[in-house]
Length: 389
Image (cartoon, rainbow, N blue to C red; front, side, top):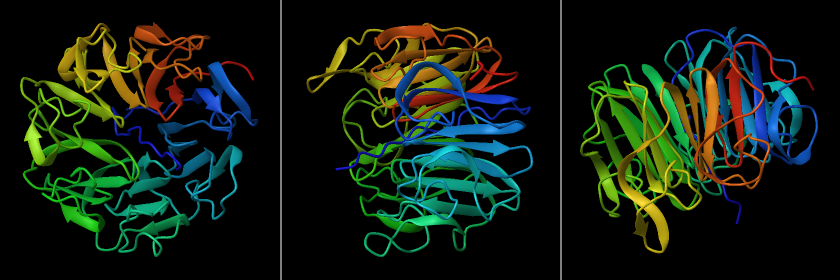
């Protein structure tokens, strides 16, 4: 079975206020995920993505990377089995290529083998895999063949923010409410069911929502975090690893509040753990801790695996952006990137393949604006140039 993960922008993390000058990547590179013009097993140190400048947002996901440019267009590179690069083909690309059709894009999100784009007119476009209806166009399964170029989600308008993860999507509307669609096996769409939805469906109990993060694995379930304008967080979906932060391992089919969590400014989710950035620049983490992805030794167990069922502090100050990947985490602290957790493919970017249970600096880069953690590779947006080729 092909494993397809989210990584937020799982995730929409903190959007950059100014354009970046370059993108770097590290970790696995078997499909050209690092955008450096070549394939390799992996790189444990940052590699510059070729030929990009004036970058507003960077997103990594299952074997692919994406960049939103200042001119409102998107560049994509890496794996393309589901048509997720949006260039009309299913051939992987070692260098960034333009996503067809789209312009005036203000935000991108990607989960597993599919991608979303929010346009300045409040409409949403999707492309890539569609086995669980994640393109939102009323088809799924055998009917839901991958689309290798963007198509508008019918009837969806007045959208102000988007999120994707695993095989699920969400859109925040101008009225502060949320609609979602996709796999929903663990109730991550928050409509009170575990039934797939191939068109946007209202999420229950949510209003005044600022941002959403979805973490999951296509066909195996997911969980969703919703950050409200008052700085609190509501959660729904899979909770077998404690990733809802409720102090237990019971799944939820509609959103509920995370106890004791406040003053949150950003959230991010992977398949089995969650991150929250607080207004004082500190980070909370909860869920699975199999490889140290929570940033400190876990003192609990969910089944036979280490976990934390409630948010706990990560020892990293002055954080401005976060991203949760598959069994590892990234953060920007004082314009430097730090990483912790699983490192078998060099996804921590510190020159080794040794896991770390505490944050370690990513080597060789500075002026970091934003980070995005994928399945087993990472991307960072820089103010300034990256390492030489």
